[in-house]
Image (cartoon, rainbow, N blue to C red):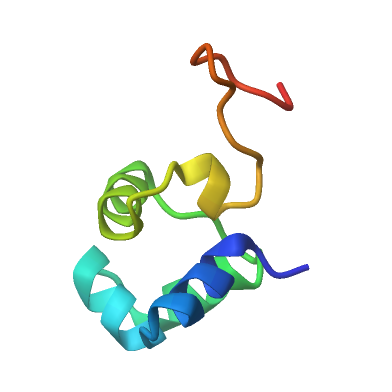
Length: 74
């Protein structure tokens, strides 16, 4: 199952190569993240959050944070 990262990337009109450049990783790494074969490193997650203005939980399809700041799906 593809994770939300791919959907958000497409929604923004960005290529895998663009996202890879912004995160300092290879295009293959972004492809692997999108297809759930690998998860991004902590450093890459921070860059993804900044780029997409979303939490890493949302980008990885793990669900949003609750309104009180606690995590769901724990």
